[in-house]
Length: 164
Length: 358
Image (cartoon, rainbow over all chains, first blue to last red; front, side, top):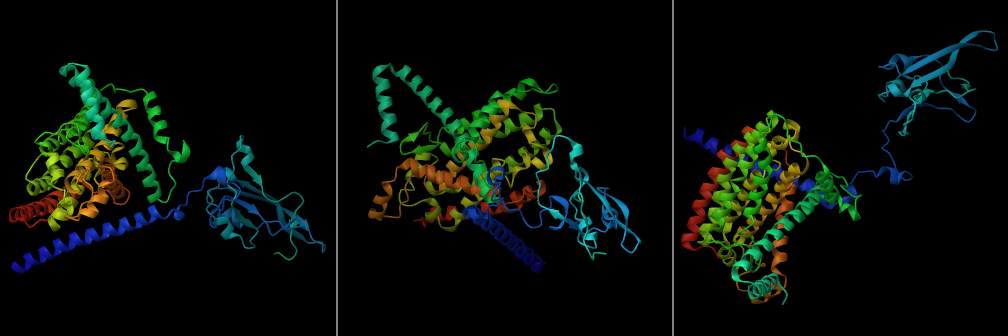
């Protein structure tokens, strides 16, 4: 009985000290933030448009990579279209005739509905040839919703040599 | 030398010379009333801005920085906005009580200011039961909150008001006992006597460990009494939208908001008076040289500095600690603070009787 009482008292006191210690720990962190203003992460957006740097993992929209010869790496395999959880991507394919006279499936139009996109990154992970990636542009406001439906492959572009 | 004491004295002399004594007293009451209202407005603006800036820096943000230099006019703009808004009274509300509640809360806050000593010789009313008066009046503010919650005819308001009632009634005990421990050490309820007794050092340092413990308990209890985080169950934004003032808008809401901040100022001023010597400069025993240097800083600055330090501490608590649940809140008071403060009061009494304090 006495031992039980002692146990209780010990627990009571250690609880008080534990609580005080954890509260002081929290206050030390907020006190550190209060005195160290370099930690501030606020971006004063329209003012710092030039020097603003977004975190690497920020995702703004899907773009298709084109090199200087206006060639992309998209084979039109529709893996991204299948991976997309809400039907943001629609791929229209066509058949090219290779020099050997064989028919080959190729990309005709890569339609991207920005207004439906949740920036989940699943299409980029599904792409076997790294043809698309996430860009950091986030200033998407337009006056007409239809302007948000984009064609990602540039006019006249074709698939890069050697990409299967 | 130019000091508040001299200015008030010369105004008093001039009024008494120009008018009959009755008119002079009436005019002085008017001036004091205007000063209190002005102080309230100023405190509301300064403290809200301070809170927003402190919270911003503690949460790694910038806070208001657009209106005026460095955002310093933000609260003025907010006040103007609130003044322009319509003060709605809901259909199902008890109209009389609903409209009375904010004024009751603010009047209670004004009444507590009476015995507070702002600087040397600057006190509205130096009654001989100053501390008792403060504890008695500060328990009245819960009536305003209950009135607001009941009259709103809204479940959130009622829940918030009931929580606030339970909270203030229980924490009043610890706060009262902490205050008594200083009264025991001083042997007087008069505020000016309590400050004078700290001529050779503040009670926080003179009273050994029990004074420190009662100071900590007092700060915890008044944080709860002013309904501030971590004890802000009465408004608990995430649970009760805004608690007892959910239905209020416009200037009536502004009065509740103002009363909250003025109450913080008042409890911090009382804590500064009881434990940190009020306007008394930092004196250490009989070191005449050191004490002389400290006396060069005006007493009003000492008072404001101590009060704002304590306000900053309470803001620091708010932006660090998570909110307690209602049962945890009552546990903390009845199982931890109350036994501790009772034992502490006994120790303080022992110190006072044996004259162990410095």
